[in-house]
Image: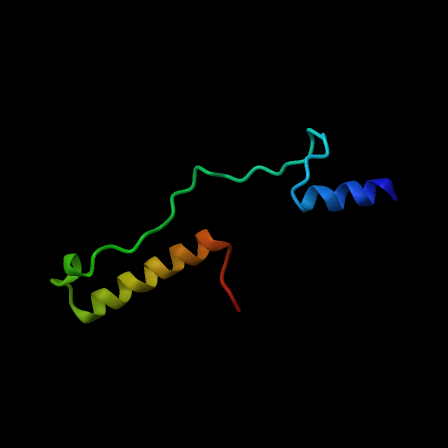
Amino acid sequence: MAENYKYLAAIHGVDVGDTDTNTSTDKSTVVPQFGDPATYSHLTAEEKDKLTAEMKSKHKAWAGGIQK
């Protein structure tokens, strides 16, 4: 029962003193960012759509997966 309370406290951000609990996040990933629309003015509509789809897929992967 005490382990259950300890677990619940840990998932809510309380420092329970255990070193084996991995609560750190990976800060090394780079957040995908969309560029300035003016820099893409030379692209055709098809090229823009393709680039937008690629960026959306990168952003969804970064954000934690594809939403259903």
